Length: 351
Image (cartoon, rainbow, N blue to C red):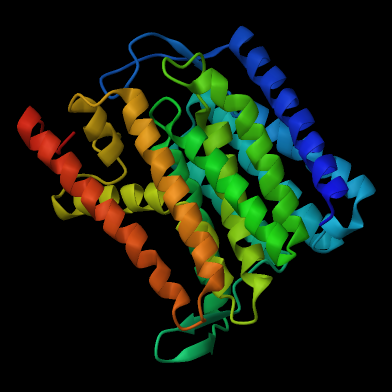
C-alpha cells in the first residue's frame, strides 16, 4: 500500500469517526434510557443505543466502498449477504434496546443472520490440528462457523456492562486487525476492520466513565457479529486457514471472561441464562477497583493480544496455535487477582 493510499484511507476513517460521533450525539438527545437496577454498574438513568454510531459509520462506509472500490468485495453475493445479515442484527438489537425483546427472539435473529452469512459461502472448510495436520471439515465446517458466530456475538454483548471497557477493547482490536489484514493483503477484512475502528473511535469519547451513553445491544451484537464474520474471512489469509485464530486472539480477554463465567455458573448450578453481575470485570469493579482501571486493564489485554497476533504471523504453522498460551496465562493471572479481591471484599460469586 502506498503512502498516498494510506493517507486517503485514514481520512476516510476520520470522516466515518465524525459521522459516528454525530450519530452518538443524536442518540444522547433522543435517549433510550437504561434505568439502573440491582445488577447495574451505573447509578443514574443513562441513554443507551450509542452503538448506532458504529453501525452508521460501518454501513455508510461499506456502501461507499461498494460503489467505488471493487477490490473491497469478497464477491457480489457474499458482500450483499453480509450487509443484510448485519442490518438484521442491528435492527433487531435496536428494537431490543427500546423494548427488551425475549432472549429467544434475539437468539433466533442472530441465528438467521449467521445462516445468511454461511449461506453466502463464508464458512470454515478446513482446520489445522496439532499432530494431525490440515483436516477437511466437510459438513462440520458450517456448523462450527455458526457456533462461532453465535458465540462471538453473545460474548461481546455479555461483556458490554462497564463504561469504556468493550468500546476501547474493540477499538484496539479492530485497529490491529486492520493493520494485520492490510499487511496480509486481505482488502475486505482490512477496510471492514478500519471502518469498525472508526465507528468506535467516534463512540468511545462519549462512553468513558462516567458514560454519557451506553453502546446498547445495537452496537455490541452488531460488532460481535461482524468480527465473527471477519474472523472467517481472515481464515483465507493462508491455505490451512490458521489465520482464523487472529480475531479470537485479538478478542481473547473478552472471550475468556464470557466463557469462564458461563462455565462457572453452570458448574455451581446457577441458571446460565439468568441476569447476573458475576463476570470477572463486574466482580473486579464490585470489589472496589475503579471503573476506569478495570476498563484500562482490558485495553492492556487488547494491546498485548495485538502484539501476539503480530507474532502469530511470524511463526511456523506448527507453532501458530501455541501463541494463545501467553494470552491464556495473562487471563489466568487476572482471574487469580480478581478472586483475591473478591475474597478480601467478602463478595459472593452468586447473583
